[in-house]
Image (cartoon, one colour):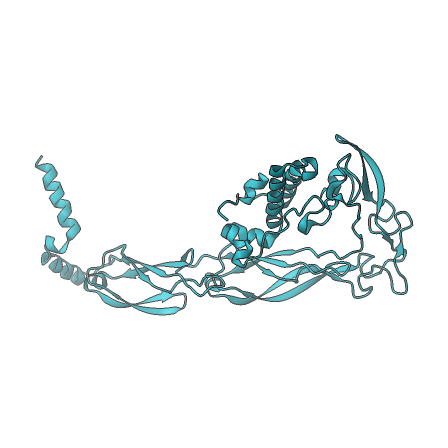
Amino acid sequence: MADKRDYYEVLGVDKGCSEDELKKAYRAMAKKYHPDLHPGDKDAEAKFKEVNEAYEVLSDKDKRARYDQFGHAGVDPNFGAGGAGGAYSGAGGFGGFGDLGDIFGDLFGGGGGGGFGGFGGFGGSTRTRDPNGPIRGRDVVTDLPLSFLEAALGCKKQIKISRLETCAECGGRGAAKGTSPETCTECGGSGQVRTQKRTPFGIIQTMSACPKCGGKGKIIRTPCAKCRGLGRVRVSKTLEVNVPAGIDNNQTFVLRGQGDHGTGGGPAGDVNVTVSVRPDPTFERDGFDVWCDMPLTFAQAALGDEIVVPTIDGKAKYTVPEGTQNGTVFRLRGKGISYINGRDKGDQYVRVQVEVPKNLTGKQKEALKGFDALMNDRNYDKRKSFFERFKEAAGK
């Protein structure tokens, strides 16, 4: 993986780019390096593969999230996280993308097939996509607010989403009971008609969406009253989710198959849940480590003491050594946050804050003065070294 370029660099986009910006950049790069435009050019073919690999990862929200967090290790099959795939598999296909006409249809006015000047057509195929074939449902995106401890320890929560479900009234066909969709006579059910278009490369034949059926291949004369011919209806749904322990603010976990229902027998989309973690008054997160401030009295810091420290797992005992200074940090191993899907845990760091007492009574003041009178420079290392430096500077 060391020789792999950053996927965002490959496509020439920023890390925070939108889906539209990503798609636009991909189309430009894929068109630029397509082997049909560079016959025998091995360098162009290699770049074309690289562009496709980058786009398949970054266009998938789940893979993109893993890549943003873990880099190539998050999507490389050797790491068990799912491969990038989708690389160019020769002049006749796009791996996971199907016919090239499906990718560049809107660039050249067609939805697939057709020739491209004298280059024999993108993808080398004249097949058209079945307009009523299986199409995966869209993903649903939602936010989930969590407390610090809920995110650190994991929890069960309920979320409410709105998704498209197959219409129970018509079974997803869109036609009223007792009727059926009719095959479009204009396109013969393909959803596309052949047209010609002038381009900088010459006149090309393309396949465009049929104007009569809108590219669906079917015409519904009597629409279903419930879904109005769409085949799906919008439904509010409450889902119980298991929030993984160790998730951090702005991270996303996925509920597979809980998004919009697909059409034509296609699979459902996913639900992408992005968490927002509220700040905690006691704990502060640093990766998988936890920090907290622990106030001590002057006597505890000077004499040492066994104290009780709050942790995300409950209370823990710790022996503060004699002469502990303000700002001292001690570590509680394994008392931090669990690694997501892992066995290890971070540590907890406790920062000592020696508190100076206020509102002393007269008796307390006299006692403190008596105590101070018994002290000397040997008891104060910093004070002693400070005045020694001062005397040395004054003598020069």
